[in-house]
Image 1 (spheres, rainbow, N blue to C red):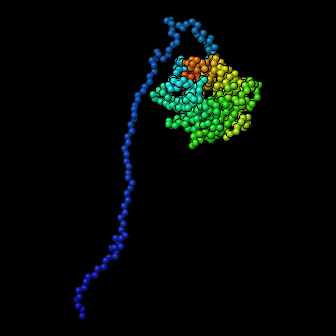
Image 2: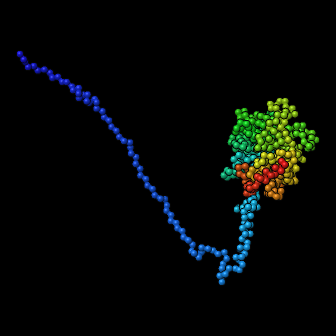
Image 3: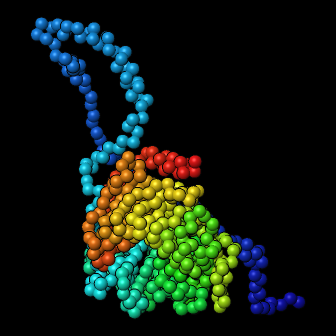
Length: 505
């Protein structure tokens, strides 16, 4: 009933083992790397110091050596007791005295007031007999710009000239070779370096043009120029100056000519030309009325401008000196139309004069505002006098005889409130110190002669010890000023203020 039968084996995989294997995971962890370092410290150096008292017999030094018998001089004790109160009283009085307040010790010993450091020359200009007409320091104080032209008779328009620059900080300075020479087709009558950009130089020409050169462009340094337009000058430009505009960081160029025009220009860099912003005309009929009537008899229709000065205190004020000896205070904000023919002009001509000072007997060659007082300025011209003025009155405060010939330029010191320098037609340069009791020059530069008139000068505002001086023989000399001419005395500001107050009173 039962039989054996061989069947194939059957296998059943274990579900439990499979489930246990799938649940296992391999997990590991490790701490961050541990950084270790070794350091050592040790003192750098050791010192050993010690003190010891002096021997007992040297502890006190006797002022008077004892006599052989050990007795003090007779009457010494009584004398010291008698004068003790008097000496103490005098010492106390000296402690409150101001007799030596202005005394300054000169530890360097006696030295020359001025000494010549460099004598710069441009041989080509000297061979043609050109004169140095104007000098100006760059805003860094290291470069001196020099204009060449003529101050005597001659065909100024047809004769070419140049502008030269020397960098006094350059190693291997060659006084007889300028670092840069800018050739100009006519005489250059004025130059003025930009107050913030050392590469820019504004210039006025004898043919009436106004130019700005960029000395960083050696191939074509002309940046902008006026050209011969209806709004420009038609007479020689005797003065140029940089004027800050309302927009921060921008400057215009102010120019004045012998035709009685004062023009304010702004540069159009794309077109390479100047654009007039404002124009002023000076005519005798619109000069403020005054008791001085000498100028009315001259019969001129214009007031030929020979000098100009900008006030560093009031941006609306500038001064003008004329060929006929007029000295005028002017205002940029004047809205009075000028009594001149203005047809063809793009800018309306205005009459800027608001006040007239006492006229001079000849042309006013130079005017300069004091950098230390808003009301004081100095002027000079063909009368050989330097006049100290106040803006508050017509008559000068003080007149100093500088030379028997013309005074071509006068400039205040940038560091000494009472010091100014004047360049004369006799070749001398006199430096005056108004703080001294004597009105004689504190120092004189006598190098030169009748054929080497000192035509222009300029103090270096960055290096107050340097003074540049141009002459008719074509040289520019750099003079070093002594400590006495550059360092202020304690009461110098007070003396200047008293001088101005006396004028106002």
